[in-house]
View 1 (cartoon, helix red, strand yellow):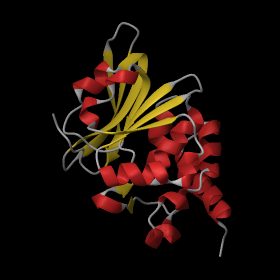
View 2: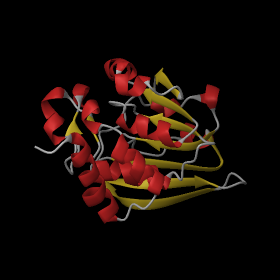
View 3: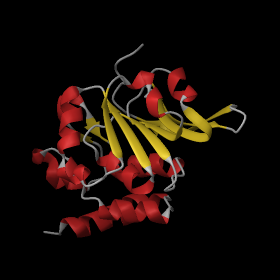
View 4: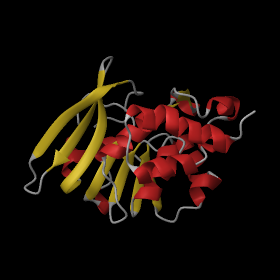
Length: 210
């Protein structure tokens, strides 16, 4: 039986570095954070496997590579403020907290919101603000954000999220129904928007429409 630390290092090497993720800080954070503490008890043996896993309330925990790819696309640094739509179990939230100055994370399912908030692994971070609410609306009180990450798929890019992106900001979001694309939205210094398709993905649908 390999230790969780060995499993985690192997996950980063074989699933993430091998697929071209290069950000050294991100790789170090993913080696550090104990993903098995964010996985339902019955699935902990699969915590470091190369696939998405079921979570409570019909939600999922993304494949480690997808977590890494989405995070790398944000180009985070310790001066930045991030909005996460879809707290889920809090694994992605913890990665963001390691890489950014402030993290605001929204979850529409009350049970998931409470579970993530009470996870001891998350409680160690002082730079996370948990919000129970509708991700389509974003969180205007703390806007604008240098980066926004969305971990459920809306049918379209919500305009309210684009409007809460700071000039120079980046948003990564899966978009679509049966066929989904991960898209990178970049707002330039003049508030112009560029959208780039990154790769095909499969996320749970985003709920709580306007």
